[in-house]
Length: 369
Image (cartoon, rainbow, N blue to C red; front, top):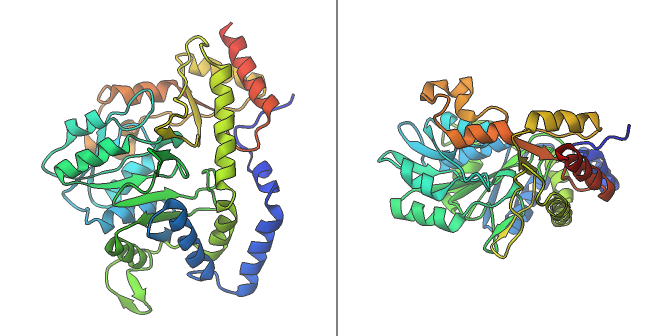
């Protein structure tokens, strides 16, 4: 049976294989694997892409959020507002910064944090908001920034799933005081291993991030703060420099695939489709996520037809054991719990063939018939 993979990095890499091999070989021959020219060049190029002044590359996306919060002075006794429906790394980074994650429910149509719900959970201890541009769809950043200004809060964006997306023609990951991203291999801009970055226009936050990621040291043997070891290596930076040049093309293909899904699945029974592109919002469809009360049966049906799907995320964050001490119970965040029971991710990656999308859509229509 011909299978439609949920993700195939192999096809994506085929178009740049020669350049990737050349960049890796060049790095090996240089003999420099940590904190060298490739990292410096990538930081400059990624900052320019994000239209920000500074970029500090780090070891992974979790650390990018953690260090962003640390750079903004967030710590013990502080509260940070996070989305109720997101990857648990967002909440973990807040905890590991010493602060308390306080969830605000998301908009069930966009899956992103609802500005109205943000206002409902602000307390005297609230210091920051972490909007997550989930699945590649931009948050309503102008309203979030307005709330933050009114209440004197920091904004640290989690842009791990939305590299290249825009809201009102401004890049996601460039609105906040500090903005974190991940280069995990499955991301729109993915390395061949772990990686992350912080972009900002705040020079002090940038200098803090550079020192904190390197044991708290800006100069060799001089440690100004108690930092960590979270550095992007030269090999990953070399790979990311190649991939960054292809990101706009790959994102365009994701949007084309999404347009096909939106057209072919329009008005299919018991499916809620994600929002598409508009004059205000330009998503990049890291994932194409539908909602259905038939999720388990539909997933099983598609698997039998050779179509791979995935679930992001099957257990609501507040119901994970790691966050049990926060006191949330089943029923505490009903929108997040509903989404965890109903969302299903379809294949969307660049390199997905037209006939593969047609097969996915055809089988979904067949199921509901």
